[in-house]
Image (cartoon, rainbow, N blue to C red; front, side, top):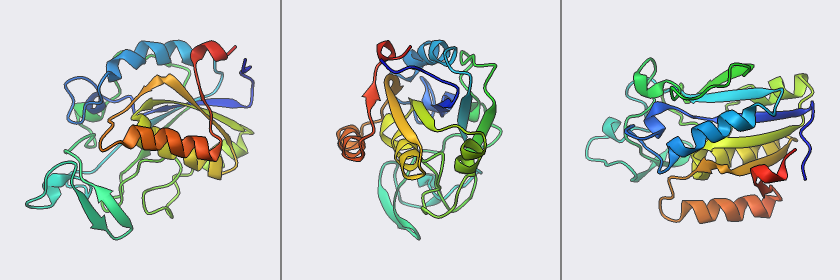
Length: 209
């Protein structure tokens, strides 16, 4: 069993309309995790929410690149970049949190992906792997040492956030039941393999107390 303590934080990743049913980049089964995450959050004193927050015409959108289609890969200035449908555009209903998300005691909403020319999967580092979001400093200053992760999508924003939490000196734990994946080109299997290689555990709600 894993006992949740005062130095633990639940990081709820991108529970937004565009990633849920009917959204521009819907993750299969996304809506299923919302009530589950609400229940999990009640066990944590500290909760942080992330919110994808792209300006119109973001470089990660396929529509920004004439002739390109969603899920194609281009070479950005910082390396390979998957192109996505326009999603989570600032101020739109698609960028809003799912209406059923109910975590009133969340202490921070961290917006990411707002730099026009850099995508952001991780809650800690933008995709250029240089630009920090400030989340690491926030958690360190508050004495939070273990990060439990839940949300969307397991194989992108949850994965990169978990890896960067680990590399930033935190203990990272992925709550597998509370995540759903896009799973494009074997990305979910690759995610689990990478997390295992780093020693980042995947646990179930029943493992917590």
